[in-house]
Each structure stands twice: as structure tokens, then as C-alpha cells.
Length: 432
Image (cartoon, rainbow, N blue to C red; front, side, top):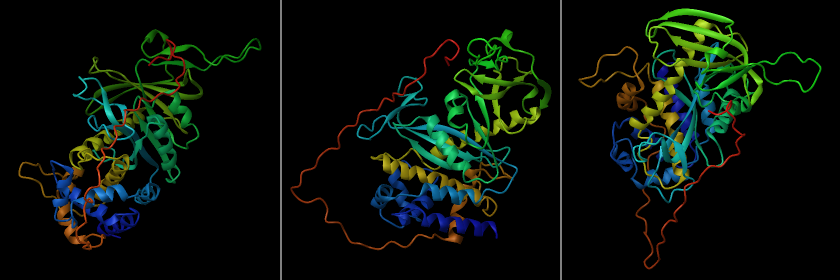
């Protein structure tokens, strides 16, 4: 089966899984793939591949109910068999500071100029689990991209998504997460998930060694000697140490300690890895958690963590090229349906990477491996060859409009929700 046939099959199968309004939703996806920039969301209806009128965009987003589980299974089918499937997780915010009638807005961590430079945005958060297919590059292919409601936390949502994805992937899975996931609550919630975890630690964490054997008197100790990341005098001798040379980072010193744990997760031991750049002494050290079935290869494990940054490239790409945060939608349902299309758009670009012909702009440099943006710029010529599985629009005549004399009511204002979750008592050892 050729790559073009794979793409056609993927488009036909996902079309059937989009539910109500799938014809308009699929035309909307093709309009996004062939439109570089828009000033407003409704301009996508002017695309030649969108064969309907502009109200169909909003109606399809309101009525559409894509099957996320079925769409994830369809994407997993295109993951080739390999020794390790690398997944990365992260979350971001869709800022909606002026949408006072939008339900379930929350305070999200996001750099914002409107809030006086504070890293807080008013809007809705989205959690993403993506497959990282290459060792280098900006490709990240989302398998789950869902809204974080006011009743959930980013850690809880990520743990649920990771459990759902790992249940569908038959091979060995490695999950990569940044410093927010390197904490006791996430380790507890993902303890039963069959996957390896490589997580970054914040540099002010305090860890503990395993306790000494029980002496038969008093209560057994849960924690051993303290290991503070900020206090080198508390560091013990590393079980493994090596110095290597990286073409981009120069000389790198890597050390590993075994059987350490966090105070609130004493039953979840891990290996601690420290990465330091010797040629750049002012750079911050990188602390990593390794929880895996096998012993980590010290010269390779820290390089695998660098693949996590591909998901940050994807967040920037969907904002700039797929116009993810452009529409000013009025309901959370519309925002969720629109966000469900972002992974499908990315997977279409991935499947088209071997058959699309590069059409660079005059100021673009030639490339051997095309980036997602370059493929999107050339996708229109590919659509002309494969067509669309969506049906042609059926004329329905003009609507009768709003009845004369019927009063109109404004949408009620919805207050911003402040999340309140029970937190363990912080001490000097557990404070982040």
C-alpha cells in the first residue's frame, strides 16, 4: 500500500468517525490545510474547498461529536512497530480573557501580556499526549488533545490520557514529561500504567534515600538520608558517572543515583539522573527521574528527554498555522469539537510527507526532510488529486429568520471558576 493510499484511507475512515455535521467539519479541515493565514475564523468559509455557507462552520462545531476514542485508535494504527514508542505530555491554555459569557473559564498558567506580565491567563486549559516519531525535528503527532475542565487538574487529566493511550499501544512505551509531572501526585496516579517514565525534576526538590533495615524497635522509618538538589553537601556518591561529548552541547557530564523517592511517594522509588554542561558552567543543570523496567543507559537516556520539546513546537504550530486560538467560540462544546480536529490535521500532514511535492516560497531554503509547515503549504495540490470524502452540499433555501416581535435575551455572564483542590500540608522539604 502506497503512502497516498494510506492518506486516502485515513481521510475516509476519520470522516466516518466525525459524527453529526461531518461533511462541514471535513470541508473545514481542508480549508485549514489550504489557508496560510486568516484575520477571523469565518474567513475559512471563503476557501474554495469549503463548499458551504459560512453559518455551517459554527453549526457543525456545535452539533459535531467526534468519537475521540475511535479517532485515537485510528491514529494508533499508523504507528509502526518498534522497540519503544516515545510519548510526550504537556498542557497549554487557550486564553479567552474577554469571553465573559463562556462557561467553565478557569485561571491557567500561561504567559500573558494582558495580565501585566504575570504568567496567568483566563481561559481554558488543554492537555495533550503525543507520539514523537523522530529523534530530531519538530514532529509531534497528538493522540489525545482534550480540555481540562474545572473539575479536573492537568496532572489528573494527563494520567487518564496516558492510561487510555497505553491501553491501545501494544509495544513498549516511554513517557516524557517536564518538571510539572515530576511530582508525587503524578507518580501515584500513573503507578499502575505499564510504561517507562522519564520526567524532569524542578531544581528545588528534596528527595530521600531508602530507609535503613528495620531494627525491631519503634515505628519503621519510611525515609532515609536527605538528598537536596540545591545542597551538594547532601549528595552521596553516584552509582554511575560518565563524561561524553555532544555535537551541539559540547562536553556533558552525567551521573546517576539509585533508589531515591519523593516524600509524598515513598513507595515509588526511581533513579535520579543529573546532566551538566561542562563547557557552559552558567547553564542550569538538568535533573531527571527514570522509572523503567530496565536499567537506563546513561549515555542515551538524557538525549531521549530532549525529544519532549517537539510537543512545544506542535503547540506553536497549531496556533500559527492551524489557527487553533483564532475563533471566538461561544460554548465549550464548540471549542472542544474544534480542538478535536487539530490532531487529525497533523496526522494528515504526517501521512502526506512522502507524496507531497514541496512548493517553497521564494525566500525559503530547500529541505530534504519537510517540516509540518512546508507540507501544509503544499497540501492544496495533493487535495486536487485525492478529493474529499465529504458529500456535496444540499440547498435548503433561506431560513425564516427570527420571528417578528419575539424578544431577544442576552447570554448570562459566567464567573471565572477558581479551582480548589485539597493539597497536602507543605513543609520545608516538600515546598516546590
